[in-house]
Length: 483
Ligand SMILES: [Zn+2]
Image (tube, rainbow, N blue to C red; front, side, top):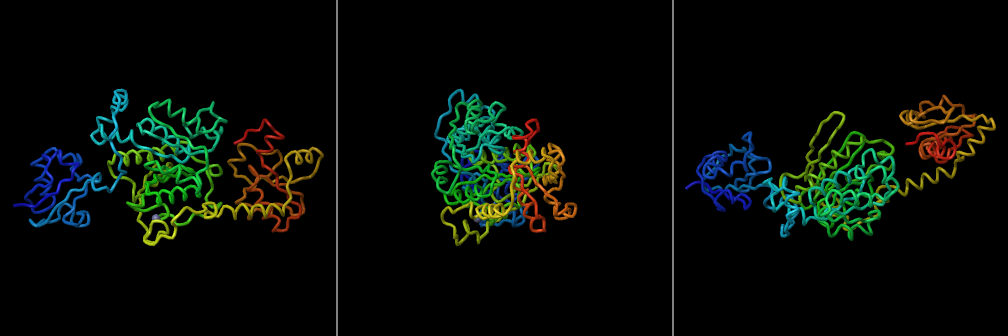
């Protein structure tokens, strides 16, 4: 009589188009061996070359996943039903995208290396042509994302960005070239993508993504890819994706480290399940403050592009429920399991967030700005030209630079003493509270904190240099290198 094995639609072409097959065997392993003996073509779909059950094929005995039983040694009775569930089936992965669109002969030729992959084929390439993907940001992560998704033939790629290409972007934002400096990133991104693949539609949204426009912009897309560099937008993207039921392909970068995952609340955790609250403002420095290895967004953005393509063609195991941690210095990838938080305020059992909120306030940014303004209103400030004139007149001014040593190596104002902000508390004894002191950093924010600290510690005559060393370079010393 034997045990019944249910064959999923995707595998039926390799099993005489049968939905159920009866096989003899005492364990799951024996059963699968018997099945593959009858239908040898099934073998490469179920097992890897190393003879291991492919990790995107799940086998269930009645309702139980064999991974949580005795795996392939799980014993079987004739009354059991064994079901093979490849991750493509059952709607556990991917987004449903139709493949009802024809490819031109040019496209067939352009995508031939995709078409001969069984996992892509004509159907997968048609899905890619039908797919609409929205990229938040045309910067470090948006660059490899845009380039590879356009090359892969994603039918419509949307970019949300309002930045201008800056000279300091070119070290990592490979969508833009030297001659694009000063142009809107959207213009340069669109040109680059169309140069690679004129068949792809590129939609541009020259705006900051906000609670007011997020739904309107995101609605028509199949998924959103988060390439942002700030917490308010990151939470906004997450919340809007959950409320619109769209996958959010997540990536983030910091110095030499990156993270990637896929958040899709219908199938797994969301970003808030992982990080319910943002860090306090100022705790996590931005790439502009902390630096970033230029190639790092290339790695993380390419992982995001890979995940997007897999979701579109409905193949493989996505990063839903998994977080990849990449360390470029150690060259290691770590994988963490992510669980859906039943108490998540957004995607949990009793959600309290049911619409988009004020994300700047949620991330504590107005309070921070207000506090900074408050602090500044109590302190003296000086422009760079005033400082220059005073020094030329022979004034005795102690000039303190609170930047980091790496920044000091690039440029410094003659006669300044370097005391990085982080060392100020320990080294304040090196300064005389009765001297006239002018403090500067790169642009004026860190030095304002230093001035406030010094005033609290009894320094009477301490002044913040407006605009920092960048203003000095612009107004006083144009030959100085800037960063
Ligand atoms: Zn959640």
